[in-house]
Length: 172
Image (cartoon, rainbow, N blue to C red):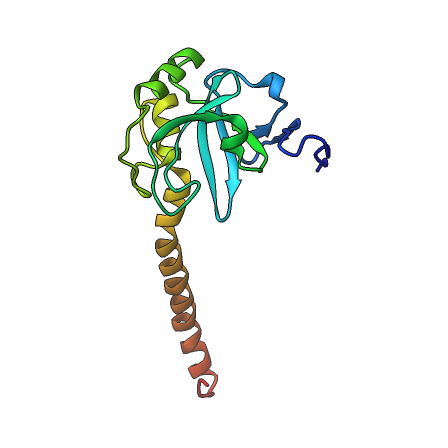
């Protein structure tokens, strides 16, 4: 990984991460309608680049425990001191200018809900016409994965038990 230049602490640099379909890019390469992502403590924050170093995003819980509306902010304020990435959206239904129009259409909306209407839901709606959040899908799947692991372990234990009994040993 490259180090950020000391004179540009919020600079973004060229780098492709094909496993996440995201890449960090230089400011000059930002395109109108791009899906921007920046890391926060324990989650990622999402917004739409609208040009002139401005981002429209669902402020939600990005700065405090008090939820915020869809708002326009500077690129630097959106970054909050973190790197910014562009998330590639291969299934984007809309072009850059239409994505921006859709983002501005919801400007001022104040119906943030962590699990059903967050910043990632907002961006996917702007780009694809449908709201979804990979982060929330992952979290909601955790109990299912945990339960599946417990059931698999129990199944293996039950299958191993007859072998132990037939060998004349008592299980511990």
